[in-house]
Image (tube, rainbow, N blue to C red):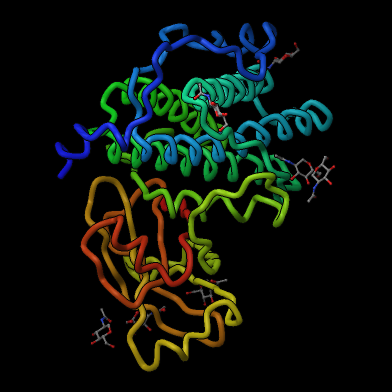
Length: 326
Ligand SMILES: *[C@@H]1O[C@H](CO)[C@@H](O)[C@H](O)[C@H]1NC(C)=O
Ligand SMILES: *[C@@H]1O[C@H](CO)[C@@H](O)[C@H](O)[C@H]1NC(C)=O
Ligand SMILES: *[C@@H]1O[C@H](CO)[C@@H](O)[C@H](O)[C@H]1NC(C)=O
Ligand SMILES: *[C@@H]1O[C@H](CO)[C@@H](O)[C@H](O)[C@H]1NC(C)=O
Ligand SMILES: *[C@@H]1O[C@H](CO)[C@@H](O)[C@H](O)[C@H]1NC(C)=O
Ligand SMILES: *[C@@H]1O[C@H](CO)[C@@H](O)[C@H](O)[C@H]1NC(C)=O
Ligand SMILES: *[C@@H]1O[C@H](CO)[C@@H](O)[C@H](O)[C@H]1NC(C)=O
């Protein structure tokens, strides 16, 4: 099937002449701060329709990151970073500039194929302290890393020529994440693998930070009922419990009847694992964290136990939520 699709020109967008189109211009200050500007290596002649959709979603995510770090940086420079090392502002300035280069690069790519560019939305972050800024930096960056790993996996056979570019973004995002973890007093490298996620999950993980109705162009992916989690690190022996909350008006669980509900967990390169959700009241339940999960993990409420990440995304009743487990 893949081979057939690859040979079928109808699913590909062909541009006769690849030119490096100047997109929303990147200021030379940003390029200097970032350590480099737009790549000058051009784009492949062919790109699949799936890749266009994937890069539109990635631009949606990078827009969020770019705004987040720009806004965070403005907060830091006005509030100070006295508790943290002197190069904090310098590093976060570099991170903000690098996100801007990613945004402009993806914009240029979509324009090169004459495709819709996804503009930024308006955003909201529940951040009132440096500690919260660091925690959300880790979460937002981990979602970006998971999204690009998933994207690279999905495009590896249809668009192999785009994998080098996406890989070179993931490694930079991981360095950002390592920095935030270390600043937050955590080891920068909690696990041997990071966790790839589906496009639907990546989109829904970003949505809580997007002001509803503020996106000039909406991404055509399903919006799932929200799930939140309190990882209060309560341990029962070696078992960790996480408390989950959902909105009963978005998710009337009586529709599920007396079915056992599960939390599906995704971490590193492993298949999803499931633990029972114990309902503790309306819109509230708890589940044990499976053994051996570390670093950024993703969890969703489901009544099924699919054995792969993409099917779990399709079987998600609420969520997902990103959790820092170590
Ligand atoms: C910046 O500060 C404002 C005002 O306190 C806050 O609402 C916002 O979430 C902060 N943004 C970031 C990224 O820290
Ligand atoms: C930060 O800079 C101040 C003033 O330049 C200096 O006194 C202090 O030792 C520096 N702190 C660190 C952690 O480098
Ligand atoms: C780009 O898209 C516009 C609007 O759909 C269309 O009019 C134009 O012909 C396209 N250009 C190329 C080079 O495909
Ligand atoms: C988004 O932000 C822009 C610029 O700050 C503002 O003009 C606009 O009203 C906002 N839109 C929404 C839906 O909040
Ligand atoms: C935290 O853990 C304790 C001990 O298991 C539990 O009693 C409490 O309800 C938990 N609190 C939250 C907010 O999850
Ligand atoms: C730990 O879990 C066991 C089995 O679920 C339960 O019987 C026990 O009460 C729990 N202990 C605490 C402190 O929550
Ligand atoms: C999960 O729930 C099922 C059905 O309610 C029950 O049979 C099973 O023992 C539970 N598993 C655990 C580990 O509690």
